[in-house]
Image 1 (cartoon, one colour):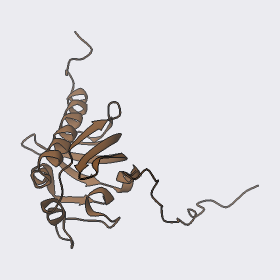
Image 2: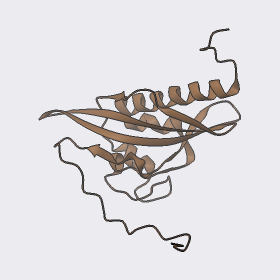
Image 3: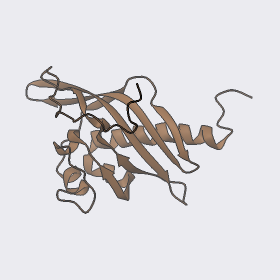
Image 4: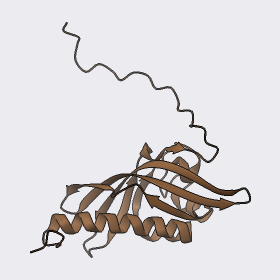
Length: 165
């Protein structure tokens, strides 16, 4: 038995997670509107790369995920930095974390953006995988102009336990 055989549910889930993430990015390169096919009806996103803001989006918000994707400019290409890390959340749910370089061609040449991405997928009863969550980890690390984006100042996290020493 080869170690690359997909002979367990876990191995199949990990393989499927990487596969559907790749298909989603290919759709975003071909036509962002086509990416809606991979998204669950209750999908939630916080993605400054698509919407230009850190505001949560769903199909019910203004702007909605659908509206942002319908008006979105396609990416020219993408490249994963190594294999995405995959964790099984449940028998029918997975999450991925990875770095990706995105390419977009324009009048001034090709722009590159390096981003850290996290996404979650849920498997349906029909065995399809649907994109359900894209949290804030999708903040760009390096925009096209070469300057790092300014991050809003965050207050320190609250202390959960009193200081004992």
